Image (cartoon, rainbow, N blue to C red; front, side):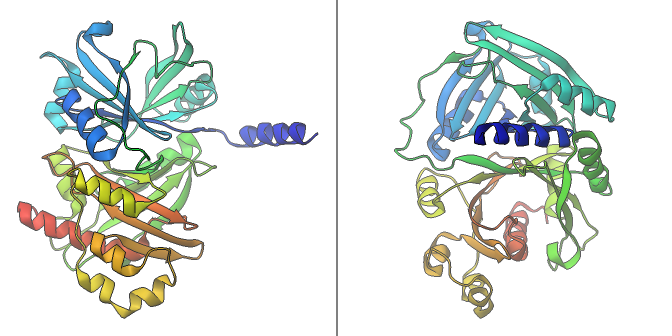
Length: 380
């Protein structure tokens, strides 16, 4: 009886949600050298290489490496010869994210709903089949040259997708993974277009506006931006969207748009259960993090604002980890420097203890840290 009731409630929830999702399926990157990038995420981020596709498997134009950590999945694509569209994309933008793939229960229904509500279709629903089953895929366009693949892998039991083969790890994986899921994915768009894309997600995918940050919430002495967060009904998929705001100097969003050559994915937040251990391991492996000045931790208002947290502030200070609290709990977070030579894509590590927010109390400290890096690059 309990199972029947749960199944009925599940069907009712799917019926009420015009665009139900199961979660993030994969973050897909386009890079100049896929093998070296895969090695970086294996050694620096503790991810496990699980699959490969390339000339040896019937794809003569590209190499593709699939890495996982918990439910987080990165797909690293790189060209293996000149004259490909993948290579042209990298020439325009540098290394970056091309696809925020979403797992859905019904690709045909999701694609039809999105296109009927104004989305540009890039790939119609189609099946890919091998000895491990059938995977269904489609794709729609979003900001810039970013896409959302829509994936149903409920009938597929292979390592990733047809055309991929299992691959041994590049390096020995850590005894305990560094992170277990993608928490949220942040996009940067041009001035005046944030609300347009918020409406896109509402109208095309049934997402709701989860939070917004404007004005003094998200400004420093020199630069400013505006941000809104859209999410599906289950909050499994969260997409903050940023646009620059008028300010005295070039904001981090302006810098990104200039160096990426248009709108795109700015940073990816990875959920960890032990941010102290993860930061120590990643830093030892060569991953660089933004630095927070001692004055942030010595401010008497900080302890009054955050209350009791599981890690002593001194340990957070030693690692430059930020802390914030809201009505639901608290979170710990830290941000890497850009992970490629262009100042575009970077990562966030986040450890949540009840909080559903995005570290609003840390925005000023974060943006000032980014501005210090911009000034060093001559881009502020």
